[in-house]
Length: 102
Image 1 (tube, rainbow, N blue to C red):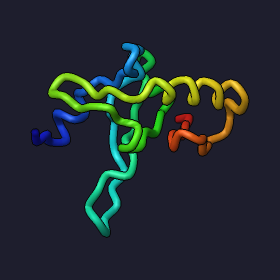
Image 2: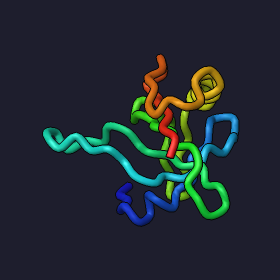
Image 3: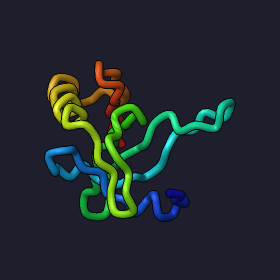
Image 4: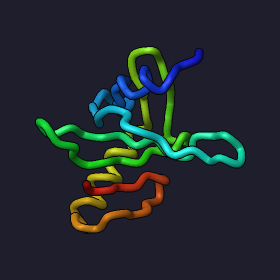
């Protein structure tokens, strides 16, 4: 399956258990080997961007034309880290996921 950036941005991101994490907003690309390093998933808050989750390709279970499914542990680790350190701009956690606050 092929997907362009416009369609990718419309995809919702959910955990395996069905928890909605947000939508793809952007991605980080490794220009040397032309591969996606991380997907930026944004939780929208009314008219502004909310929390940004960085999801590595290794955490993705599947991608369909409707949504992206990620491991359940992505959300659990993100919540745990944001409660401990809510004002840090960037954090690395053991699941390769990170949080960025806008």
